[in-house]
Amino acid sequence: EVQLVETGGGLVQPGKSLKLTCATSGFTFSNAWMHWVRQSPEKQLEWVAQIKAKSNNYATYYAESVKGRFTISRDDSKSSVYLQMNSLKEEDTAIYYCTAVFAYWGQGTLVTVSS
Amino acid sequence: DNVLPQSPTTMAASPGEKVTITCHASSSGIYMNWHQQKSGTSPKLWIYDTSKLASGVPDRFSGSGSGTSYSLTINTMETEDAATYYCQQCCSTPYTFGAGTKLELK
Image (cartoon, rainbow over all chains, first blue to last red; front, top):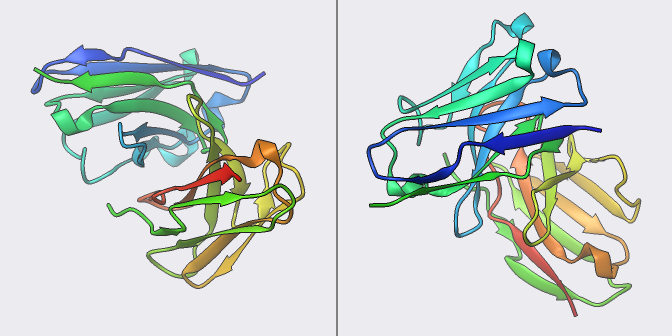
């Protein structure tokens, strides 16, 4: 059974940092292109970041809205993907999902940025 | 990064009725994914590469499209199909999502 479990969300003040973790099982993680997608309180889905596999040199890509502030990384030995979020803004408030090639999704973790 | 226009924004359909949801891509010649999301749950991949049904999706669903216009069709609406459907440009960045279409049961 495929499982993706996100952790690390919470309430954080503007300008602070947070790191999300997505632990996976049930599929060949090392070959999978992994993404983070977020859903705003208004229910709009937004692609955030992608990391490709080792065979693609772990290439990374970001949405313009998070470029320079967020960093995606992965640890194939732990079948996990991470999202380091710095300089958080109130508009980053959302449920953050990790997804494997958009076919498998986690349950999401809520990030609230507020003073 | 823009949001892809979808139409309608909301709609209601009776059991047995045919339903069509449309999405407009920002460029032509791309593949489109569709995701189904029910309240309080994660999105589920429903249709990929424009016209291929994801595992477990009933064959009353179909996807089509070309150029910049793509559609998801339900041949005969069933109760369990009530949900929000999002289109998504796949295969290259940015993987832009649509604004969503909320489909309700009439």
